[in-house]
Amino acid sequence: MFAVLDRYILKELIGPFLFSVGLCSSVGVTAGVMFELVRKVTEAGLPFSTAVQVFLLKMPDFIVLAFPMAMVLATLMVYSRMSSDSEIVAMRSCGISIYRLVIPALILSLFATSLTFLFNEVIVPRSNYQASLTLDSAVREEIPKFQREHIIYPEFGKVRILNNPEDPDDDKTESRLVRIFYAESYDGDRMSGVTIMDRSQTDLDQIVLAESASWNPTEQTWDLYNGTIYLISPDGSYRNILRFQKQNIQLPRTPLDLANRKRTFSEMNIAEATEYLNLMKESGDQDRIIKTEVRIQQKYSLPFVCVVFGLIGAALGTHHRSKGKATSFALSVVVIFAYYILAFLMGALGIKGIITPFMSAWIPTIAGLIVAVFLLFKASSR
Image (tube, rainbow, N blue to C red; front, side, top):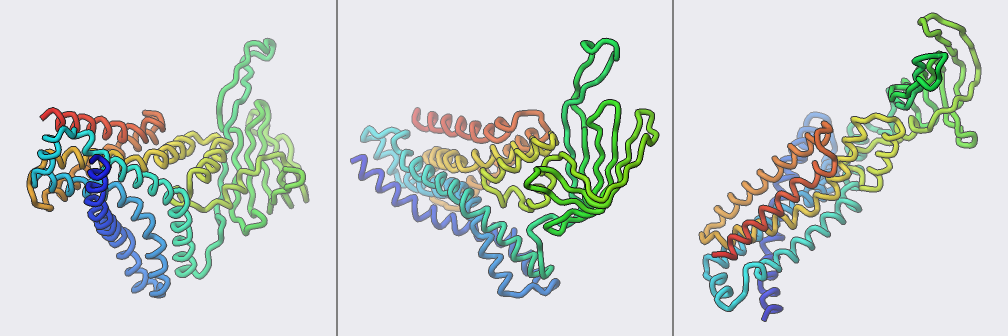
């Protein structure tokens, strides 16, 4: 009987779930993409065929966002209908608990979770990136796969501070900005207008100006061309000026990696975001490191929102006896709004460093699960 029950409830859930996915994704892509594309078609001369292509490429992103919303709407509609038709009462009179009745909703929500993770890892990053390239190439005629101007790489590190020159044991180390790499432009091969400020030594700073620079993969160094090195004394005066036609400098290739990376977090999967995080760690930029860690944790936690919404929708549906679908939709909006407000606040706290990246991403999910369990407990105790 239980297998028949599962098939029955799942069959009831699938239709509203697919309808809700279509509804939510259509509304989202219309509000988030279509209006902007129409403006570009009319004002920037974007070809209509390109606008359609970009619209289709952005669809997977909004379908993923629609999965959790569809779960809460579908479960609310189905379980509310079953409750209003006294099916829930009949099943419970046969000894079937509320926890057993929500298992089909849990199965569907786990399936939606798997789909969300699959889309976010395989489809959405590529489609978003291709949409950006397609749109920019059509509007600007060309877009390089690298950052063309103003490449800045700050490097942080531990520096030894000499408190007492006669007593080395009295020295200490502190973390500070040790080097800044700046290039005015990058053509995909060489960087031009290069300036390097080096503060890695406690008793000597230097400024390197070069007409151009390129990465030497064989020597793992930077080759600088036609430049000048200014050696600066601790009192701020020039100690020496050295001119060169070619100079090798030991620096990480991170500036090149940063210049070649042109993707936002929505255009990266977890592996690519982790690679970007490693680049940020090399620079020591704590703000970017924390933000990237938060985004990575959110990529893990987001798919499980489907489980949270599915359980909450099922629990609320067993309480709700009205046959009106408008009420189910209103309750869905309240649940979705409350969750994403909490997720936004936790994300902001995580980026500010007030709470850990793990907590900022997972607190909304854990809180949602606690609410779902509480609602299910109340429903089962009636």
